[in-house]
Amino acid sequence: MARRSRRKWSPHIDEIIRSRHYTWLGHGLGGDNVEDAMTTLLADIMHICKRQGISWESVLERGSEQFRTEEDRETAMSN
Image 1 (cartoon, one colour):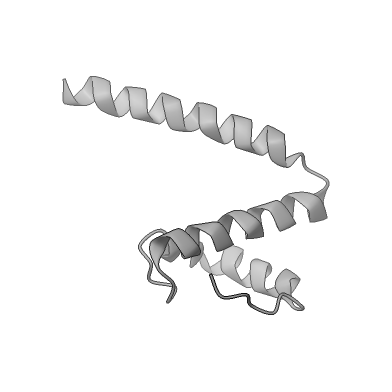
Image 2: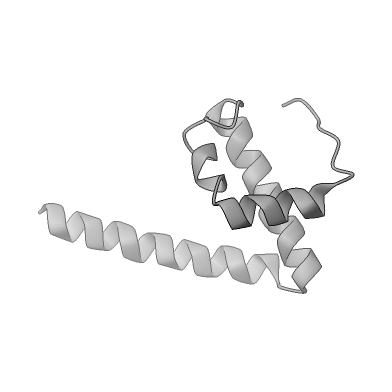
């Protein structure tokens, strides 16, 4: 993945959150391939956690739990 200058990451993150453009990254529409786009998205989330004093590990754990719940629900609905 090409390294980008992150000198202005705070305004960049604020802009992404306000615009919800982060939803494009999962489709590779941010200009990067999907894997690189997702890596950048996760790094941005980690920056937000640090800036806000939130535990990244806690967010990751809660997100994993939510993912499993949603996947279970989707599986149950398709059966």
